[in-house]
Amino acid sequence: TGRLYLVPTPIGNLDDMTFRAIKVLKEVDLICAEDTRHTRQLLNHFEITTKAISFHEHNTEQRLPELVARLKQGENLAQCSDAGMPSISDPGKELVAACVKEGIPVVPLPGANAALTALIASGLSPQPFYFYGFLERKHQQQVTELTALRNRGETMIFYEAPHRLAKTLTTMAEVFGEERQAVLARELTKRYEEFERGSLAELVAWAKEGVRGEFVVMVAGNDHPQEDEQRPSGTPLEQIQAAVD
Ligand code: SAM
Image: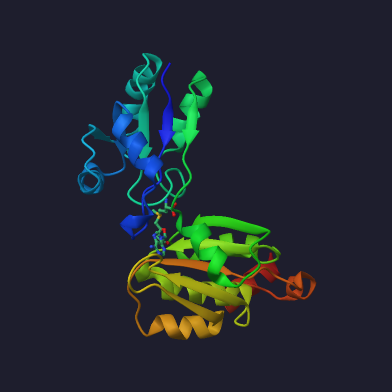
């Protein structure tokens, strides 16, 4: 059988591409890309001429049998996403699971990843940490998700889209408390890379002035969970409802 290579790509700065990533992308028979047009630009930059096909959340089921068959026939495949590590809040996990199930070797390459890059410069405790990825978009679902995290002691790492940042930080302040410390890592590896550190209340105020770019949100763990257990979460109406229930 062939092998499935998981190949990270830069999260902004093209110099973060690794020599091994280039070598593997040149040598494999086929590249499975989240977005072929996006990946083609990267491949062109590094003069990689390997064929690329799309593999994303909307065609996973349709593509899987074909890709597994190719691997079984001895072809080597590489999986790439638009940025960073495949499978981390990105397509890839179904293909990995299928390979593991079929006994096809999966070879991960180290490289760019927004979460860990943000964490090591955050100044928050780097371990233990809890990687969450994206929260749900709806307010009420976010409240439920965050409430389940409220007493965790680990540093928590979230991904969020810029146009939802202020709202999500507001919900975090509501659930975790305004004083909880947090760090925003903006535009990592790019020209306007920047870290904003402070309480959730301060970061909400900062974000409400308008933000652009990509963000990793990190929230300090809860260092006094007992006190917080007494504190109700949710809107006043929800608190009354919870008390009645
Ligand atoms: N697979 C990627 C990884 O390994 O980091 C993550 C892909 S996910 C679809 C995209 C999210 O990652 C963005 O919404 C943002 O939260 C975060 N992100 C990606 N690149 C970033 C950057 N250069 N600076 C800050 N955050 C970034």
